[in-house]
Length: 420
Image (cartoon, rainbow, N blue to C red):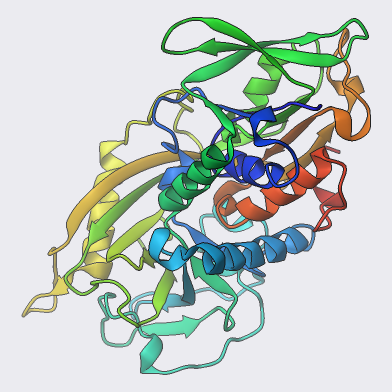
């Protein structure tokens, strides 16, 4: 029987394990992660925004599949209560003192590379005009500002990604999936035919090593995926083109947002003028998430460690939160009455094309001395490069990875997302 080892227990890894376990004995699935504090990077510190149709054409089938899977999972397991799943009205906010240049909207992660708002990735079609009911009650409005709906009805939603990750992991463990953390795979071994047969697990607590049967290896290590592949297949000449995009974030409480209580959740995108484009999500449980301060120059930290925030970036986010979310004083100035709940820094995997990489790595790219069992009995697979869409595309990616590894028909066309 095929035994599957998944390297990386973030949102993509646990989603893959979850859907794999629908069609093979869960005890033959192993999740391996080097961190002692799971979900301490992009999976736990993301905004949790979900979109159905904000994607480039080659990613659109996967985006649509994943959006429906998020909705179905929430319906089946009370996701609104367990991980804050909520349909969301997405708006673009322009303050009176700012002007927004017109131009063609950008796709993929172009809006990230150009420092513009994620609203640029929204579909071109105008959404319905709505009324005061969609005005975010927690947003500090100023005379002359403008709010425009940029999402069609039923096309955007949100979750608390940390709670969703924990739910998926708990479900996997209940089924019998094996979890190894903190742990790393130090090497791969082949059988007498030269085919992948096992991996060696190094336990981070006891410093002991164990050999696990492994005919299918799935790399879902986020921005560290290329590094993981190089460490295990040292004779390979294949380069996984994935880079790091660091992002700071804040989770806070506002006196003007107590949770949904029947009111709609909102996602607000703006170009505040502070040198970056803030993204703000009001969550069902009463928290507000703010991010958008991204950097390609912050050095990538070790996967096993929780990233340390940069004080200047957190200060900039706090000032932005005060301006956009704080109260208004008698003189019209912003008053900081916000409570900071959490500060965060995470590293998201991005590719030069702005598209994720999902597929089976051809045996000839593994290097000399090793191959894999043919068809659904073996293989080395990878999924990375989702950028800011990792949470949104997580369930769809886990589904198609599981289908690909198990030789089943794919639920979405990902032919444009391979390594080539």
